[in-house]
Figure 1 (cartoon, each protein chain N blue to C red):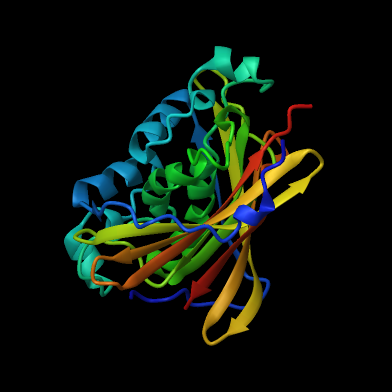
Figure 2 (spheres, rainbow over the protein chains, first blue to last red):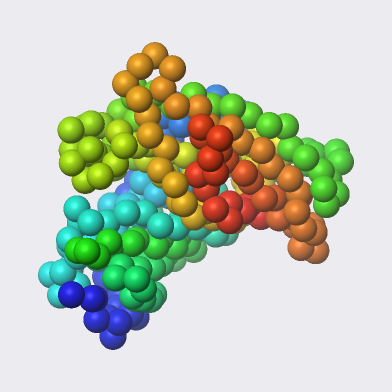
Length: 148
Length: 139
């Protein structure tokens, strides 16, 4: 059954806070095979003008993926996760995430569209510090494949 | 920020890169990202849902593809926007070679205000795997 488009605009309360650590950034950089010293070495990051090591451009996914569970598991939407594929992803950074940030994510279901028997849900995840500084926004489109 | 690239004009080609993606890389990315979807590590389940094999995380492909841009930009923080469409899965066979991701990038537009748009092309097995892969770089 198609997902009711009137759910667009639904916002979920901010997540618990996430403290970004040097070792988590290094672990992520290792996982994507990126030796860039800005992700690993505080002095190298500072030489570029950053207060601490910075995270790669797609690192926010670590936070937004967790946060999007509240949407994916929203019983009113009734998403069958085994039918979900990742359709699109986009990030817009006000600044890079960096070690020492304490962040929370607010997820909004921006749009619900149906086409060709599939549902497409686009969510927006706003990542901000606990002091209210906006850091990055991520948009994610999930495609829920039809039963056909 | 560190120094920006010396030559930036529409049409400038970024150094191309090639990245191996092996099963072990998928396990490592699952752990680091928290995305433990079984289609990225369990061939039996992947085939049962109609996939040709275990497939790479789209987000891993996306992260590898932007390396062409971050390595060129000098400071990864210059990449202020980055988006892709996942148009085709990247199957990763259970052997020593795995899959290979070939990535190129070109400065496609001057957005003004010291910003350019880089269009990224990522292929695996001769097929494009990302659509509309674009990064905005603040120089």
